[in-house]
Image (cartoon, rainbow, N blue to C red; front, side, top):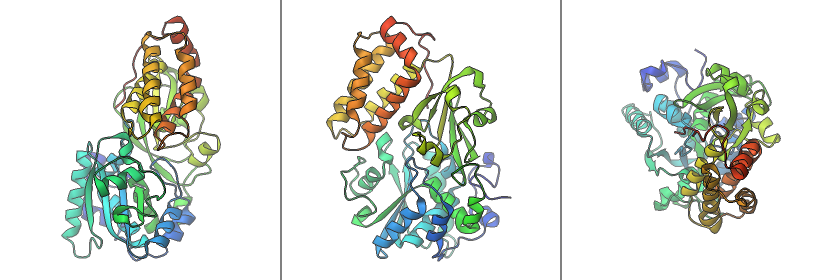
Length: 410
């Protein structure tokens, strides 16, 4: 079977065991010192949201670590509309461990920390069993691995917040510099890498960069996982990068005619109108050039019978409640935006409220102690453009064209 992230036993069979994993993919090529150049040549981009080149990130830590670095496999996945990381950790735990151990070998790390969200109990259990399976096999786990339970908080997955929690049990982003690659866990250079990125690195290590580059339909090579949201439960799919939003909707059984907008990239992403994005390829490089973001791979469809203003108000309320509480823009700015957006959505607005949230959104950008206010402001700006008529209807006519229906978020 052609190796992919979710290839192997049927997903309904549960976590893949070590024996099946090795029979399918072969042994882990530890000691493969050419892996960093291979990753650089592959063009693999990180899948945690920022899309930073994986090979370059590993090289930076390797050059600074002096044989005493650390690796943090980030599976916090605090984004409410994302389920891909927990699915991967639960169903293919050995692929995640492969990537983490390869990273440790490549950057010269003495320890691997698996940082897994508190809400993801099945994922933690699957990884714990996988670690025990490897400990029972001589030479199966050359580097110490431990699991740290990440707090159930949106900002806990930010890389400096993850390191801060491992070091001091405080999952708030820290002021920079230093960044984790300079001084992270135990004050040592630390590679913080999303679990999907690590799993992809494990496949590339076995098959080579030409194999990975041969996949992909646009400017970004490769494949990856996306989480599809909308009516009903979240679902995870593996796609070739460059697949269009419209094609994904069809594959997922979503009727384009009944969709009014799509949220791309999750709560730090952007709303786009249905017609604006139907033919858009899910290609991180092309999307970034066009001012959009693939982010953490969320594609959430908003049906025509739900209100975009109300959906946005719920997100802004959530993000305000998830503030790191370290600066005025988060504590006061986000709360003011959330309260005002909720008033507009519920019809309890004043005539100045629409202008107020537009002004507050502009004032937040670049002023926070971390990027939390920036992400919230970007989401709000996209909503004000995509749902402009609906916001005006709510704010000026005290009416909702769809009767105030609410979007369902996980």
